[in-house]
Length: 338
Image 1 (cartoon, rainbow, N blue to C red):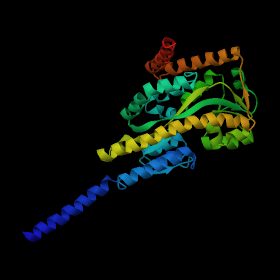
Image 2 (image 1 turned 45 degrees about the vertical axis):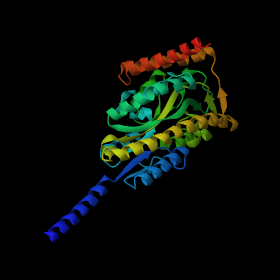
Image 3 (image 1 turned 135 degrees about the vertical axis):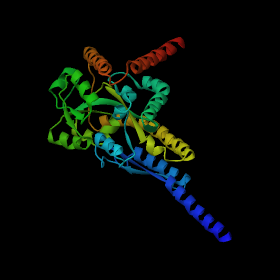
Image 4 (image 1 turned 90 degrees about the vertical axis):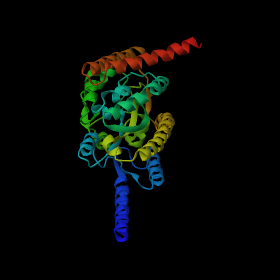
């Protein structure tokens, strides 16, 4: 009996060790974000803290700089189990949760104040929508307003029809937005944009100031149209079925630490985008301000594009109405306090 009991205890100990090992999870995450950027530095530090506080039961392995391909390729690899997640724009997640791209509708925000007010109300809703559709996220990060940047001045939206405008590959929503603006785009992966600007294959891009500098696109353009075309947001999303393999306690710790990291990224990106716009002008890029009539034309086409997105079920009418309601609420509150 004594020998049997000892053997049983040894077996149980081995079994417990096996189960503990099975709980360990390496979350493989791909992103187009360049290595060494502030975003990557913060995420890597958060991952290091998570590994330390879970005794390496939860680890992140990042593949930055587009080495795993564009968003569509990354999503195929996630479905195949080769990757578990991605750090990308909110709009890129619209294939799983359509209202993930609400913030990126053209001209839905006029300024950062509107963005801040709406995001306080709607970020949790968007994160929950992603989770309900298979992806755990840890917060949204500010990507800044995207502006048209070009080799020649573009104050008039009609001029875009004659330009060679870059568009991300396989982005149907962006394609339809471009068509609403009379644009005939040149679809390219993110990694091909710089060389295409250099070769003349394209002459116009739309990106945030911080994005233009990080990707070195600002070295190939000369003008920035002072029209905040779309608001960009970013998200780190991990497939829920992979995340669910982690123990509940480790899941909560991971959410807490990576969530705090995204608050830091959000705040840092806000500051960096303000500084980046100044840096672009200091480096010689000329800021072009459209006339009131030209701005009305930009706004009219943007409204048409938003309606098309609703009609084509790319976003929900309810989501757009929510943003409109919150923006109205912001200004009503301000008027009441005056």
